[in-house]
Length: 329
Image 1 (cartoon, rainbow, N blue to C red):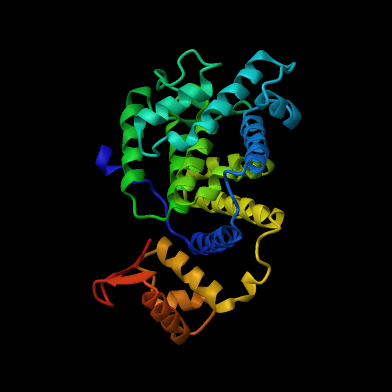
Image 2: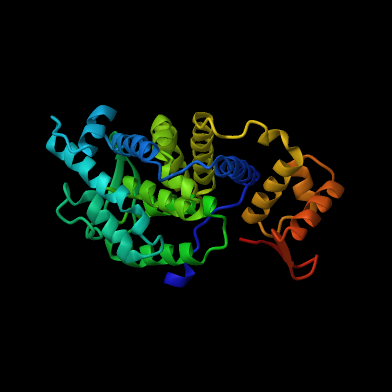
């Protein structure tokens, strides 16, 4: 069961396009030298992240109150909500030390996140659970007896998948919410773990407040989760999350005065970055499909690929007919 876990989704045209766009913007942020370890940037985004991820779950504390708690100040407010902030601070500050495919670390993260408000933090639920929207039950999670095996299967899939981290992180997020492994804190854990997966791909994601974008689109977030449940396929949710990630990256680019203004004008370089991103998302993609997505001729794509091969950024494994491309690290 563990090795056979296969989340149902399709790599759509929209997913391919979003992966390419995000990769381009992240490339600009890298070129700008955006430092995720910058204390000022880290503090400001940590405040946004924690305020937003808790607000999605109904926490009413303000940005100013969360900032004060991070600074070690006393804040007046509901005891549980203050406890939720303390737990989120511990979880996000320890994020870099977690292994994304480790069940032990997943449980430890939940223990940090929910330890101040949940008696059995870091322990899988032992009862059935249904998620309600108003008076309607919109999701019935798998039985409690199935949870450990399902989580291990999902973590094994995450550790072995060839899909781009942008796609894999979004798939994991949805599947985690579907399994609903804990009595409480599943939403904030799913968002925390997606941030962890993305930060293992690019360091900049450790300091981007993706959760604040989700908070701004909260209704769409929940509606897309429900539609994915109804369809039994997470494709639409992946598209939603990738669009949110793109927004977060663009916001970071706009607020960074160091992003080189002339980079987007370098059309051939930008196109080659897009080609690499598209191949990373779909290793079997064809020349014709690349030409269609990049809106250039197949001859231009072949020339770009030749340059990428010369730069050792791409290699071809197998024959032209049955082989695939591989992006070099």
